[in-house]
Image 1: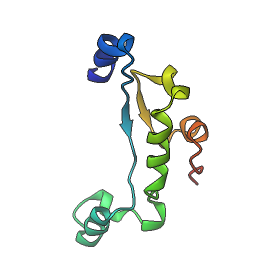
Image 2: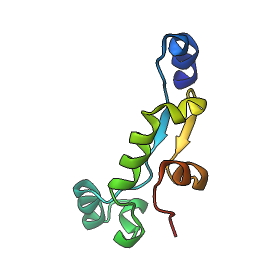
Image 3: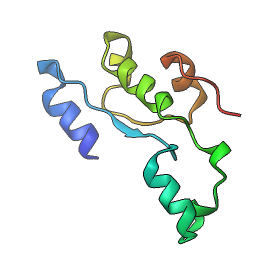
Image 4: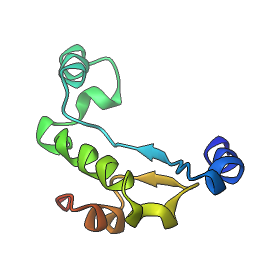
Length: 92
């Protein structure tokens, strides 16, 4: 709701607001979580994690004018349509 509210309040001023879910990304922190075995996320195999460039590409794409129609929405990098539009590799 915060994403939508900020979009409604500041969108006319040119501010584009998105809620962005990057998915589980292969980072050093995820390596520590996997090593700890502390929760369900720790059980995800490294091969199943997104590479850091995938959400980064989507975020860069969201910064351009081509994504304006999605402003005010919650977006998930795992959604195939967003990935295709942003030029991110399709997840298996």
